[in-house]
Length: 65
Image (tube, rainbow, N blue to C red; front, side, top):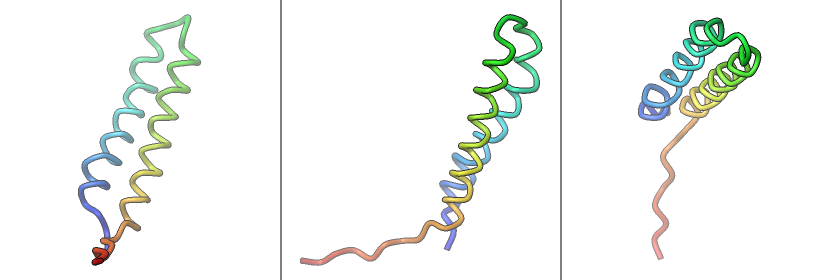
């Protein structure tokens, strides 16, 4: 069972934002180019991890006491 809220709502936007930061913002800042590329890549990698976690998420049964 996939969690569409996690996959579509968090994972995909993080991948897109990370790629945009690494590709478009880094060349404009010459002094911080390596740092901005690193942060953009990190955001993208975390987006992939959250995307995969959303694919494996499942509903847990409620615990009744």
